[in-house]
Length: 173
Image (cartoon, rainbow, N blue to C red; front, side):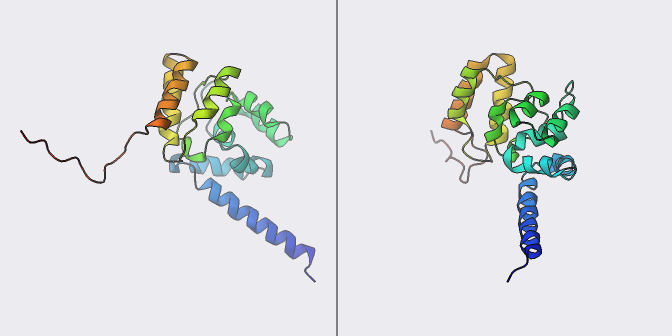
């Protein structure tokens, strides 16, 4: 018969392996801050899997946002929507992978129409996610929400090439 202590310790070991795997997905420049915050409380660590953007926003807050209130929301077990609101980030960021977050999250649109539209144009791969998020944030800041949806759609439709395996042949006259 297996003791409950062994089952609990096995479950805890599996949980820490999964947490470590998720924390390694953050950008190396911010990984230390994110890891330090995740180690403060188990509910904060759970954000690595359930809402990577919120964990990132709490570890690397943008200027003018007091993340202490948002951290308290998470630790107290309040809803993710409440914690995201306190951290000043939109709830639709929940679906983005940890790789998307490389710099503090700037003010992004969060009205109902934008949330419905942007959900259809999320990046298909973690490699595209940082470029996608920076572009959406830049267009939203410079223009408006519909422009941000447009750039999101265009980046997903025709992702930028980072490096060609074979350069195009030279033109001959």
